[in-house]
Image 1: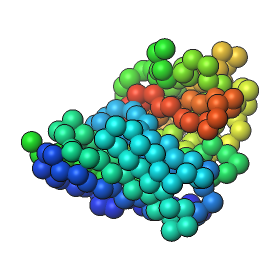
Image 2: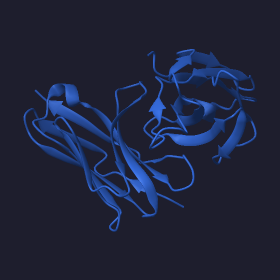
Image 3: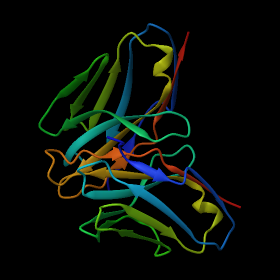
Image 4: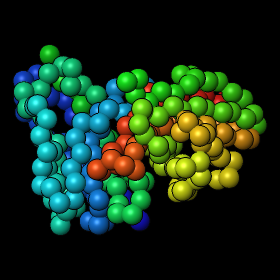
Length: 112
Length: 114
């Protein structure tokens, strides 16, 4: 059974700092991995999707990496801004079906 | 493109009642998945519909049922509501014709069971 872990559960950093969020998964047989952002009480916004054959994806100030062999992914946020404050969730999808397994998220607070 | 839409936004029910939640997928998408997100937790997969049939199901009791219509929209029904059913219910849509079947999520329906 796939298990996804995100540590830390919460993180506070001053504005302008670069930061890294971590995601680990127990079963390396994944089809892809997605990073999502969730604002309080809202739905999920997809940030980056990495296919199992890829090592990283970039979008603006965000960079996500994937190491399947070690069961890890990181989300790097450069030059953090107060608007980046949200909960960040990672989810993995196995081969052969579309069920996403989510971690419990990291609640990020950027201090102005 | 309106993206994935869900209705209602909020809902309050009492124990034992039944509830129906609705989802319209993103334009061009043919597959709808439903997730339950309890407070402070990650979303949990309930089930997925494609071609008007349930294709996959997570670890949820039969009280949770669904339907997909010919226009690809979907409903989630929950019978005999329990306090523990209080959660944010998320709908996600995708296309089996797309390269990665990336799932796009709606804003969710907040269900409170009293």
